[in-house]
Length: 218
Image 1 (tube, rainbow, N blue to C red):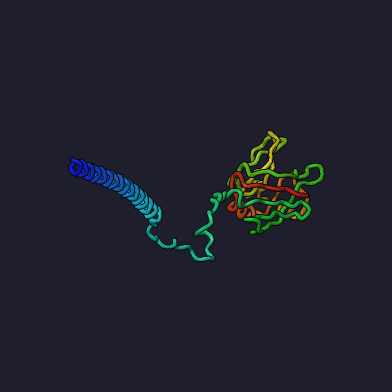
Image 2 (cartoon, rainbow, N blue to C red; image 1 turned 30 degrees about the horizontal axis):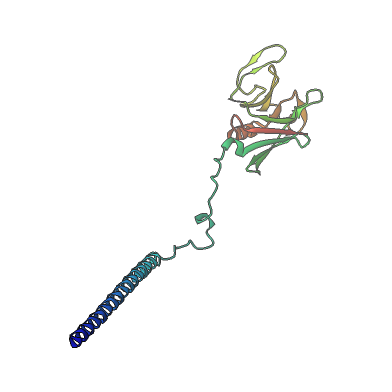
């Protein structure tokens, strides 16, 4: 009986030890699986970070350096202001100098021509200031200021063959004109108008137009 009891006790201890071994194996297996899962997660995160970094490090294709225009031609790379259209009327101006008894034709601030003239006598001085050509007549008729007599165009007309008016007070007018009184040129002899040799009046007529500035100086 004692031998049978001893045998049972030995078998029980063997089974108990076997169960403990199996439990330890199961626990170790569980820990190993958890470590493997953790390592896999870390690996996935690492691969994802590498992929993201690779994408961020992608470079655009090299399109080359844009070709710059050569120096010395600023109009190619500096914006240019549009040039104002030239006004042919404003390009030309007349400057009448009373003391010199001469009218100057300026084009772009350069003297293009000048002509001798007769100007207004004492009491009938030619007005000074800035004016503009307001009237141009070929072969004008002349009206006597006191009698109202009309003198038609012709060799005896006091205005010659050309009239260029530049001043008025609403009743009287003053301008450049030819004259048959040649000896008056270079003197203060008129009633305010500017007398010229007829050929000079014709030449001046071709250089101006209505609107051309006229500056009269002493």
